[in-house]
Length: 305
Image 1 (tube, rainbow, N blue to C red):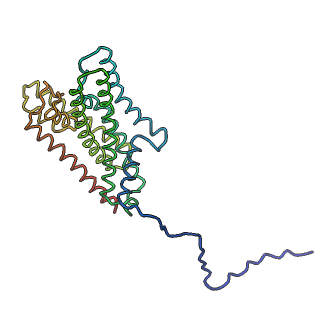
Image 2 (spheres, rainbow, N blue to C red):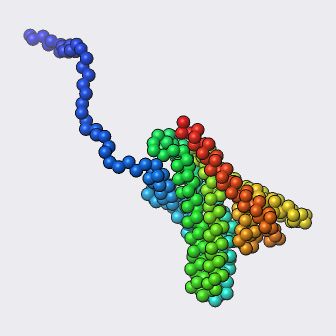
Image 3 (tube, helix red, strand yellow):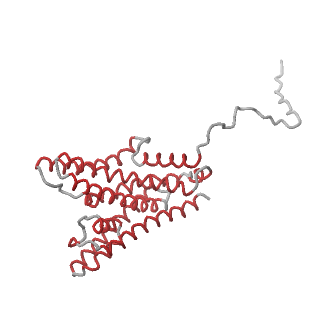
């Protein structure tokens, strides 16, 4: 009877068995487009992402819905003005963003964390800074992208109002002047809200916390300032109403446009800041925008290490 013999494992040959295999990697010989191209690409992708373009359908729902919500009231006002042959629009161009500030705040709260929180959560920021862009390029691209997205959101309904006013054959000069004033107002609002939203969102990598924090800052500050202004007006302390308005982003914009753009004020009693007080409003607004940029630079210098 044959006896099964165990298989013998051949002994490993002695010596170094290291092998180098050519797997076809080649050096890149094409053009290197540099920092400016990378920064523009980051800006365009961030701007597209603010409206869900290039992302899933689920990501498009909220920004597009808020865009429609911003424009529908303007379309209704135009329809009413045309149907009734009104001599003026029901709402001034400079007042539209103030009235719709809740929608704007919700948009900032939803898109600011989307712009920066994912990079923090997945720790991709150091990869951006490896080359060729630097910290300032990243911050400028993100800041400009969200500000541009906000400007589109706030300027689109003003354009609807303007086109509708011309179709209703309202005075061309008055409507053009009001439209230009409205664009200046929403441009400042876009810069301020974008800066505040990005600074708050960059503190945490968790998108939910960022959304809650942005809503809290924008909503609570406006509610607190409006309440204090109402109390001051009830106590006939009208001189303090304008100064209280310095502590909320939306009342800052309201004060600037009522002082220098001929807009009616939403402050109690309709008494907006004087020209002298308006200068303070402008300086505080520009200072906040610059402070937000500086805080983001400081934050991302630490993250990129």
